[in-house]
Length: 111
Image (cartoon, rainbow, N blue to C red; front, side, top):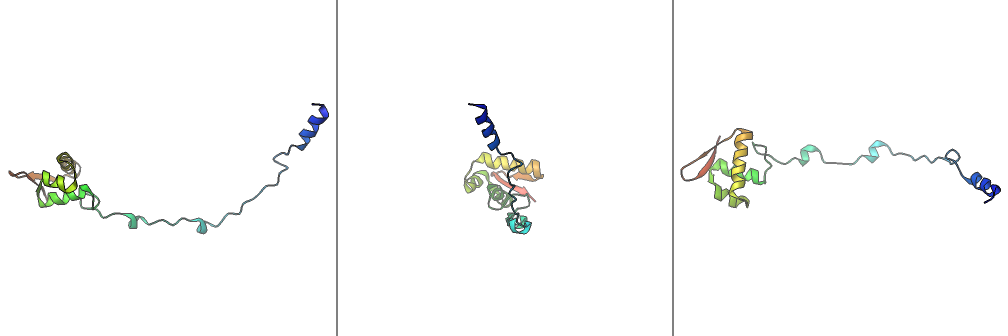
């Protein structure tokens, strides 16, 4: 390329200063606000141990209050005896609950 061609190409290059700036109009904050549910609307009901109603934990809590054996509770929640024993341990350690076991294997929370 000759010097003349290089100079012509260099002249065609636009700089950021020579380009017109496009300013976008912003909407007021009220129009762009996304509607969400309030925290009170999305919260689930919880039992005295803080477990959400309808969960395995809440079902175990309710059955232990009435008194039941581990096999019955495990069948009701569709899980294992180990899951129930683990939850009882959680109640004792984290919530200070006391669970008594009768001679016939019925576990019951002391209220």
